[in-house]
Every structure is written in structure tokens, then in C-alpha cells.
Image 1 (tube, helix red, strand yellow):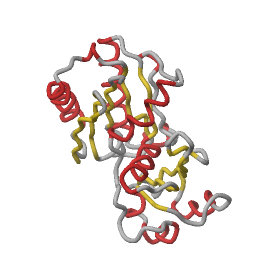
Image 2 (cartoon, helix red, strand yellow):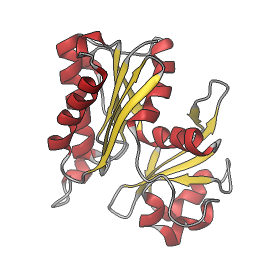
Image 3 (cartoon, rainbow, N blue to C red):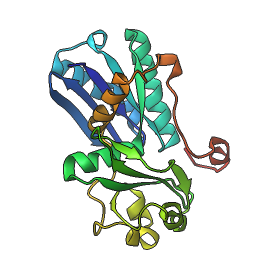
Image 4 (cartoon, rainbow, N blue to C red):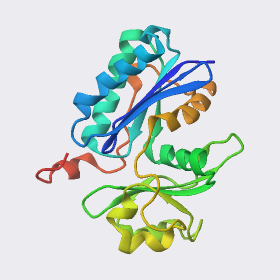
Length: 232
């Protein structure tokens, strides 16, 4: 079985997961604004626990966004550095799709709306359904929009399904009616372990790239974000 290391730092959570001999070793921690401190030691612990080196891996997986600009950059930068050092191919996985995959693997949900708080009174959103390969596939293009616009964004596809992500809590008044699970979502942040399932299909399909081509996906225009004081 191929050995892949997955890392994600795109939200308030930081996570690392390693697929090894039909098992997954992982760590997950909520650490707002501490990703640059937490991520590398977390990776080191996972590799030591598995008694494996970077050069023995078959590929590296990273959370490509959307999410915090700073967090996404940290995750991509660490992935590139590790991949360069060990000459590993890389695959970037959507953080929204990752949460949808978690919903399927943990709660057997096959139709999911993922919504992450994007600040500035907006959310990052995506709509996913299970495909024949056991992957939660995007049914519409991931976007950033005002919470009140989510219904219009989804109207041709669904009138409500299982919700995941921090956006549901941040804008509960506008969004609650669109999800079928009551209260705060069981899944608020992406976990690198769910990236491994999606990434294996990407590697098998020949969609991996070299480290220098690892790219983040911000969805939002970074220029407009940076104009606001105090934003990441």
C-alpha cells in the first residue's frame, strides 16, 4: 500500500495524517494562530511513531484551501519544503471537500454542504455528493459568498442536506434552515486523515505534481483581503 503523508493548516485546526500498511496514524489540534509552531513538530511525531522517514514516502498531500490565507500559505509552504527535500510528488486537496469526506466516513452522509467562516460577513461554500469511487465529489464550483446567498447558490441542486464547517455556527440565523442536522455541526474543521482517501484517487489517476507546482486555492481575491487592517 502506498505511503502518503497529509497535512492541513487551513483553518483554526492543524492536522497531520499518515497512511501506512492499511492503517492511518494521525494528530489533530485546535491551535488558532499557532500553526507555524505546531505543524512541524506534529509531522515529526507522526513519522517517528511510524518509524519512517520522508524519503520512504510515496507522496505528500496538503490542504490547498480555501481557509485562512496565513494558514493555507503555511500548509503549502511546509508541503513544498518537505517534498523538495525528499523529491516527493504532491497533491492538493480542498478543505471543503475534506470535510464532506469526513461526513461520509464518520456519519455515512452522502450529500453534504460544507461552509467555512470566511470573515468579512462571508462564507466559503461547496456542495458534495458521493460518487461511485467512494469520494465526495463537488457538484458545484466552490465559492465565497454572503450567507444569505447560499440558498440561491444551491437552489438548482438541493433544498437542504447535512451541514459541516464553522460557517453554520458563525451565521446560524441565515443558514440553519439549509441543513438537516440540528444545532452546531458535528464536524467544524477539516482533518488531514480524510484527505488521504481523496488523495489516493488523485495519485492513482496521475494528478500529482512536483513540489514547485503545489498551489493554494484561496477562492477569495487576496488583494481585496489584504486591504483590510488586521486581516490575515
